[in-house]
Length: 639
Image (cartoon, rainbow, N blue to C red; front, side):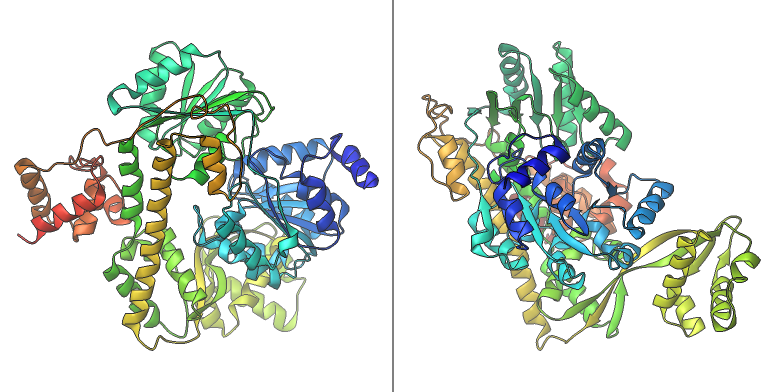
């Protein structure tokens, strides 16, 4: 163990291990797969960075957080570690350089997003490598019943077997006992290889302050001004709230900036960089901010709106006080926020009719078929995530098997004269390449090849065509770009009873919806809890603690019952408005659920295509419970 510590000091300059790190690293070096549940900021990354240096082969790190990838890569490169990342921000030249280093065996760590596992060219490249360690950050996304389920994550375990990964490290800061069990089961991790250091952070002072919508900004301003300056994050639910609150704080003399997914990439990067350098900047942000941001001296985290669950809350307050100094985490609690959060959950659940139409479409296809998730999203007017989830459910239930993602369209640009390229080949190989070039549509600079059509026309396997283009790219003969990603499937069986399958799928979505609503209600319960907040939070994650002595509950604060300020109430004018909207006969608003989503401010592919967000009635009832709006709309539709 002393040599392991010496290696850490030599490679990264750290003098000692944090709690749990040495245990995780030792297990990995022994060849075991491990689940590590550490609090936010507790040093999860070292658990794979040090083994990556010591193991023979590549460590592949899967993370959904580009900010985390960038920060960790900067650190690793500063320490001389051979590491790289593949993400959407890189240029074609930067991507090619990384692949060259990968093929040459020069990389020890490679960071990717889970979506990269849907990249046909990447999978072909990575399959050639010896992967000694697969590290999965945000591993709770694997659990179907977790707070942030991502279908891409469900397929990681199967892919790990295909790639012959030697060991796996699953990492998360938020795992209930049920979610931890799901993750261990997915990767065959033994109970003895589950390392959980506990969630308690004694330097965080948790506080809840009941507020009404009318005085919330004023209350936030008062709380910020009465405390000493320090780096601050104010979390809000909506992008427009981020802009409004930041403007309000600036108007009253504070240095505040809005941050949300609606900003340009370069603007978000500039805001984040400025925040990292400052000691007293206030960021008013949606949850798009903070993931992977490793800033030690964040003194305050305010929740202007309720978080969507205690898992999210735990992650977000975990960004405060990583330097160990006292930090304040205060929630401005209003029951009205729960309505907004619940509406998004209700609105995202597909209708039973949609599930039935989608399922009929899938089983009417050929035995081997391929789909575009974006096209299906538009066709059935649901988010791409819903499409992906439906297809994943059909895989999990044994009806479909994925044959892998592929790009329908390849574009290439010759970097050398075609005669020079063809001159290196003879016989059947030369004829094969000439046929590929002949199938491509020639443009001024790029030639475009539909690989599926070319495969049928040439009577050659599509895989051989793609392999040939990839080989020419590796040799520096071509510049290659891809588009039109499609997911291939093979039907394993048809359902004995299609209607029963639709009912089962619908129940699954209803259960997900109920779980999401339950998490929101759990936040309300937490906010109204009269005892120790820290104890309540830890109990949710299966951990026991005596009263902390420093949260608002322990110090005598009694939040009381939270009630909506403006209970939903429809009148005659509302009937007229909704009936007039129905009379406009928008194709994108053809069902009561589509109308209710629109009125509650929830967009869909159809309303986006129809450019209905600028309609005067869009989001007019965003403060009303979705189910009440849906019930009221149904009454108007049947008139």
